[in-house]
Length: 513
RNA sequence: GCCCCCAUGGUGUAGUGGUCAGCACGCCAGCUUUUCACGCUGGUAGCGGGGGUUCGACUCCCCCUGGGGGUACCA
Image 1 (cartoon, rainbow, N blue to C red):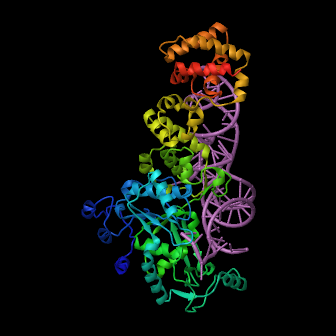
Image 2 (cartoon, rainbow, N blue to C red):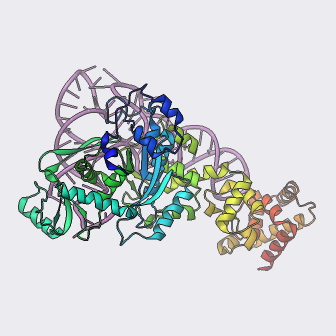
Image 3 (cartoon, rainbow, N blue to C red):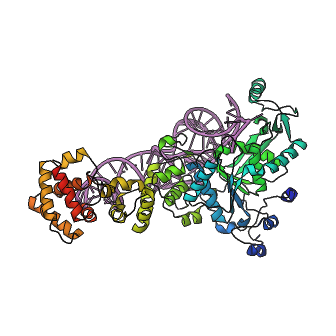
């Protein structure tokens, strides 16, 4: 890409209502925008009215205000140093929602400049996670490492221009420097012509991060150390690569986790040294685990794959993730992807860190599960369990499960035989229970066809004949069939098992002594 | 240590100076009921503390406290 062209005019220009470039807009292919067109149309929307300031809370920025949004470009830039965590997934989702909401182009970039920790397996895991969540992207994935040549070129430009210098100072040296100069002054190294490359931070002044979620944040230069932007071997570091790649990628809106906020001035300083324009930032609040600490494997689902394995539906996960840090203007809870796209606005994102609450996800997942047709739910359960022929069991279990993982413990006995719950047997297959069970068997034996209404009539007849409570008959039957006290409805279960199998299980329970 | 961000019930949030502080999850109770769930009804619980500004602060400002992030030749 021709850099001079990129820098010829600012990436961002205030766009007023009516500033529509109608002719050009109409010709634009969507959603993809050719780079050539972009160069002519390099205008992006800033939040309306007071420029970069966060609009007053509670006010949505309507679609009509994103008039030139086809030129907006956002990116999701995960680091492949591990699986995609739910926090990363939420960041990906917000980028995706913003892109789909506004028509912006979403770029997937893999931040793999840490060669030690980045692996192809992790990249694949991230792609897999995004696929599962149905988060697609318009460009990429782009490997940051593949841009090494370009990084070198820019790096040398910075050095040649005096914006960066080589210095052998180590982390220890920096600490020593600070001990000497006090905390009031950031580290400033000497240009030694060798060693790691550091960016020269001006002593005076400050850098302001404009953020649509947080407003302006000012960082005084005197507190900043000259950051290392490339290792002694020349390989570049994150804060440099990200600035160059966002610039070259013509990223207009950087939506990422708040953990990057403190690093943003470094990236801004790189851009400034290059004479490049700034993107708009949106730093999302971080996600915490149930204990308020960082999310980790310890409290259940931490990665997207964990979510899948725990039996959550991707659409429920998306809905839940969207709600962690954002709420629709009318405070709705259950929102389809279409509704999310329709209602999402980055300006309404909360500033508070949120805790990942698996209980609420389970509830939400249950809601989505019950919305599925039995055929669809069966298909998902068969994929999840790796078993087939589940439909009848799904039909009678569907009201009782919140996750795909709940199904087998509830209904697996249909296929694998009764489970063994000694307490259940002891409680319900005592002398009385066995007596009731014998009556039930006798009543069920002649039922033909073995249909639910007839089965129910037969069993209720037993209840009546024995002057018993319903459960005194039903529970022994349940334990005989399922081995436990918890199962789908007893009549449905009998029908699904069929007469022969049901009688056989009852006989076996009676024989078990 | 220094820099930065954040602060409404247990949790996620609504709320832009005057509200009985709303919704959802959870929890508790009742109803329904063959177990467990689902569902329905009701209930419990909140503006972290202190100063200001104002006729009036959850809302604006400051301090404190608490939580989080950054401070890497990690991202």
